[in-house]
Image (cartoon, rainbow, N blue to C red; front, top):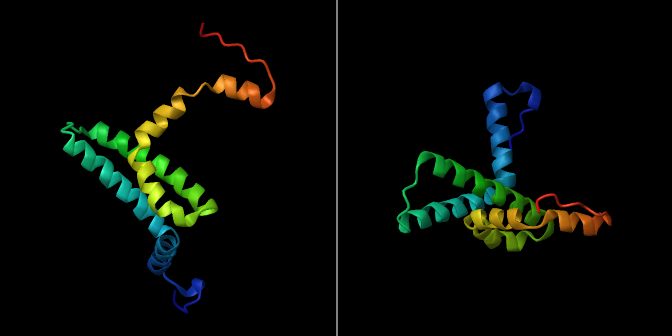
Amino acid sequence: MNNIPFENMSTKEQYISDVSDLLHKYGAWISYVGIGLVGKFGWDIVARKKPSGWYILGTGCMGVFVGFISSRWFIAHNPEMGSYIVPVLTLASRDVLVFIKLIDWTKILSAVFKVEVKNNEK
């Protein structure tokens, strides 16, 4: 960013430099998640839902979680596609988490590890 050695920078300059580097590296991905969250809250307003504080907090956390995981995956595998898939996955974060919850994990784990798992829920 500038030519001042790191040791000679003040704490404020170091903080600004760190934030600048972070935004330079991940700013686009942060904005993709933000776009998805704006769409999610906009959809709730159009659907005439009464968003409470807890609803906004929970929906925001779900959106940030799914958006962060999907952005990390797309950064590693296909960055070009991530620019439009990450906002969509953030927008559909509730449905993604419901789908993950409904998966029969005991069946998958028993198939992967070739171990018989007893299901005590019956």
